[in-house]
Picture 1 (cartoon, rainbow, N blue to C red):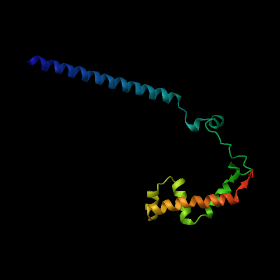
Picture 2 (picture 1 turned 180 degrees about the vertical axis):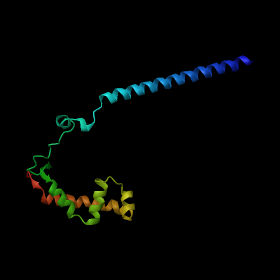
Picture 3 (picture 1 turned 135 degrees about the horizontal axis):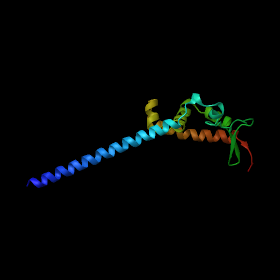
Picture 4 (picture 1 turned 90 degrees about the vertical axis):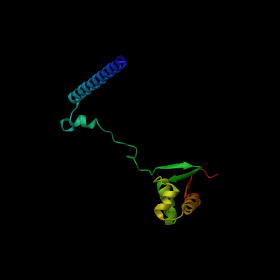
Length: 147
């Protein structure tokens, strides 16, 4: 009867030893990796100007921005300036609902709480704004292809 208890004790001791060995090996591997990394690391103050220049790039996409960027949709040219004017043409409360929803990624419920108005009002302001924006853009967009 004393034998099974002894076996359990031996199993527990063997497992304990295995866990300690595994942790010790992980610690040694971590120390080795840190030592290797320290040998290869260079501080920014030790870099030459040529090496510093290799660490970054400059986006040249808008560098040559003589012409205003635009896109053509359904034969109409829409510019950033025209889109901004269209948004400014909206009443303040409708513009605020559209900007919070699309540019700040807020839900109608979150906007309603922020503005202390019902959710249905937020939805109405947002959806009715599209008709106003559509009408403004149709009237003011530059036609590429007059259909």
